[in-house]
Image (cartoon, rainbow, N blue to C red; front, top):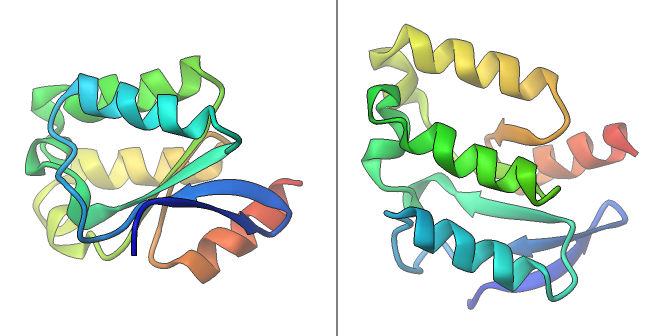
Length: 122
């Protein structure tokens, strides 16, 4: 499966292929944003596609990536099981909790949960 735009809960979402390349730089994130500008309002990124630095908040990589999406007014959904990362970091647990309370960046276990969030945000 290649990265492609899907209609999910009435929202155009660029859904990334879990087997695609790792997002390891700000440039990679900007490339995703550029791809999303072809008609998507949100980007669903499998957690497995994120460099492990994303989950180590001391690197500031997560903040840089998330801020780029907010600046470009695109929703970002991190999709998948991140329990191992959450178990290692109280700061990450707090970030996920606060992000999930907002409307721009969400951490969800699967695409069905993303659909529920999108319906609730409409």
